[in-house]
Length: 271
Image 1 (spheres, rainbow, N blue to C red):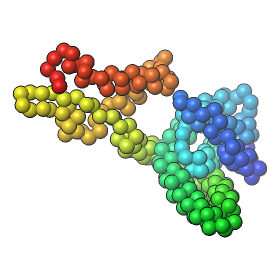
Image 2: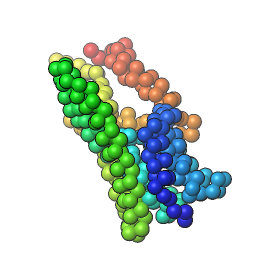
Image 3: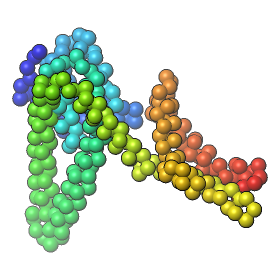
Image 4: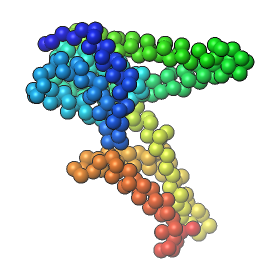
């Protein structure tokens, strides 16, 4: 297997800085950018037109979406694994990406978007209002520091990916399964906070009014968001369905459910 050098890692780092979001789309999000970021390594590890190159491109063009600063850890680990094993264990690479992108997205957005921006820009704003030129320089210094952190993440990810592919080769399946379970757990926890839908439907039985949403909450809180997400996953498994079509399906479903009470009231028995 071809050995990568520092120059290859630096090329991937620079491409990740500028190009991960290129070609962002609703179907694969950062998938196209991810494959472009990986190209310097792929061209060195696999021959053009070879089955390994085709398999690598198919793998890296798949769905991917995470916080950009944290993506350096995933891409670095991916490079380390492919340098040692190539595409012999495609499932390990897919499991690594899908298992870590969800948790890393939450951590990265919290640290680098919410906390970092709030602290740096609030301090620099107050200093600028007081007439201090440091208020202008502080975001620049913070940005340079962030670039260094992302470079460090790339190298740490590469070193750990290499270690996974050598020292823990026998445990890779367990590690990737654990990462996948962690990713699914995070997605499940995000459903009630990201997908917000309540059913404004009430039944009147004599003097008693029953709120359907309250009854659903007693069965399982956030039951409707869960059903909508599972329905979306089921639709995406259909051959001619894609994320763009799914958006229109969900819009139509929302319009129908949002007007469900007047529709049913037309048949009588509802408030």
